[in-house]
Each structure stands twice: as structure tokens, then as C-alpha cells.
Amino acid sequence: MDLVRACEAFVAVSGHGSFTVGAAAAGMPQSVVSRRIAALEEHFGSKLFDRSSRNVTLTPFGRDMLSSARRLVELVEAMEHDAECAKRRRFRLAVPAVSAPRRLAGLVAEARRHDLNLALHTAGPGERAALARTLEVRAAIVSVPPDGAPWRIPLGLAGSAEPAGQTIYVENLRAGRAGRNARRRRVWIQPEDDVPHVRDRVIRLRDGVGLQPAQVVVSASLVDAAAEVLGSADLLLCSAVQADELGLYWRPIGELELVRGYDVEAGLREDAQRIRTLLLATIGRCLGMSDHGSRSGDVSGDGEA
Image (spheres, rainbow, N blue to C red):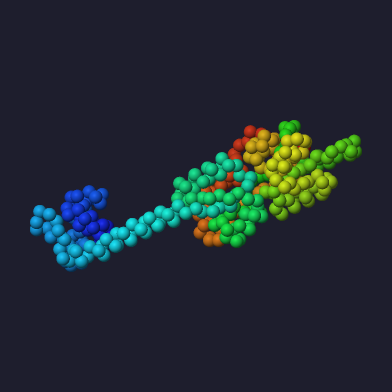
């Protein structure tokens, strides 16, 4: 017997003095109400209602039990209300500051379809990791080495002019003898890629191909880096999706494969798994996963800077 549903039927009928009206008020068929009250009477071993007259009245036993039944129904209603409030409680998630607002809005909308009420906090890689460690957020999308990462975003170089080739070789940024006094082209690293598994590999490549130290620069912000590239022949290290959003022409790097890796860090393992399972594809789009790019070109072919 469903004791809660039986008590709901009992309270509804007692409040209206009628099986028909009580059933309608409770939103149950009258036959269901009758069966539930009969089951409750059998369970207690005594009658709750006097059915001998035209009007349904409580028996002395029924009057004694009504208060308890009412408390049980009210408690269940309160629990159901609390459960709904708990599901609507905001889930603070730290995400990369490079994610486009339109894509983040899509992430929040998708999460709500899974009863997950996200409150997003955009931040750089170091701050996101710190927020997760100190539990200031329930979870964070953190930068990790790409091997085994749930999200992998290929990186390349992008500029304001369309390259002739399909790959950019960093060694071609070396200044020739004739151009030693000219301004050397630079590669700008945005804060999102100022992490060891990306930045250090670019620095090693710079040194390996003979570029000047000043030709690879870590920018204070993506806006500053993009402004430098839009106003010169410099290049921005970024994803193809970022390049499209900035109106730049993107190509992969010829000398090495660079990839951003991302994973979820959370105080509770269940929270991290929930984010990975429910929102894998949507978070991927926020991070820059794309199956097309209007300016990214074909990744095959000869390369130029």
C-alpha cells in the first residue's frame, strides 16, 4: 500500500465530506480514492468513515487519525518543494574566458534541460584551477595536457592576411640579412595558452628555429593580442574557431602539433562526472571544437608564413 497516497485521499474526502468531491479536489478518479481509503482502513484495522448516511462522516477513529494523516501529507508536500528548490540551486562552474557568450548561453540552456542550473564564472586557466581547489566553485573546466583529455582543441597561427600556403612554418619568421633592421614579425600567446604544455613548447620551437626571444610574446589579454595582429603582420596562437570570431585567417603550425587539453575538476567526483556525461558536446563547442571554419583553409599542402 502507498501510505502517502492513501493519506492524501483520506484528507481530501474528509475535507469535503464526499468521495466524489474529494476525489475531484485531489485529482484522482473516485474509484482510486475508494480503493486507497479501503486499503488504509484495512491497514489500520478500523473504519475511517461512516458510510451509513447520505453524507460521508468521520468515525471517532477517523477523527483521531486525521491530524496524523494531514501532517504526513504536508510533510511530503514540503519535501517535494525542497527537492525542486534543490534542483534549481545554482551550480557554479568556472569556464575559460575565451568562450563566446553565444556558446555559453547555449551551454546554460542545455544544462537546464538536464535540471542543472549553471552559474558560469569566466576566468583564465590559473584562476579556474584555484577556484576549483578552494571550492569557490562546484566545478571548473581546467587546462590539462592533451593526452587523455576529454576535450582537445587544435591550435594554430592566425593573421590578418590570408597565407598563400596551407600551413605556417614558424622558421619563416626569421629575419633575413636584408631585413635585419626591419620590425620582426611576432607570435602572440594569449593568456588561455600561458600554460606549460603549450607555452613551453612554443618557446622551445622559437629557440630551435632561431627566432629572437622578443618574437614570441605572452599577452596580458586576448584583446591586446588580437589588436596587435589586426594592425600588423604578426600572428596569434589560437584555435580555428577563435580565428573565425576575430576575422583572422588560421593555419596549423608546420613544425609541431599544439593542442589545448581540458578536463573537469570538482570537489565531488559525482559533480565532475555529471558535467562530463551530460554536457560533453556542448562544452566542447564552448571551448572551440568545430567541424568547419570559414577561414581555416585545408590542412593539407605546402606551408608558408
